Length: 74
Image (cartoon, rainbow, N blue to C red; front, top):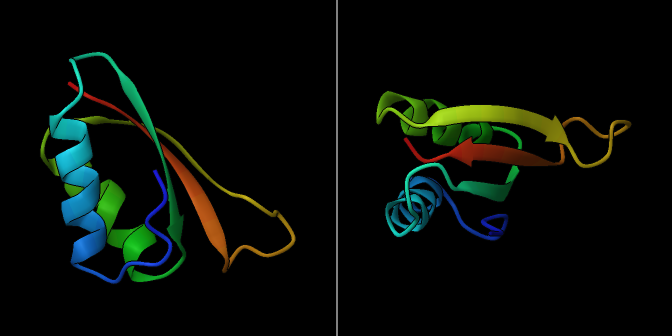
């Protein structure tokens, strides 16, 4: 899912709703911006008990840009 055009807290709300619709064990890939979304979305999903599998910038030479987050529903 792509939440790069959304602002906090809508970024977390959209990610949370997507994870809630998944089956346990499924993985979601989320595109999100650096800054608040990158800080808040993974942390908040982990606090809900989901597994953060990885986070990396789409473009390694631009670490303040868009990132990809992988989360597994627990």
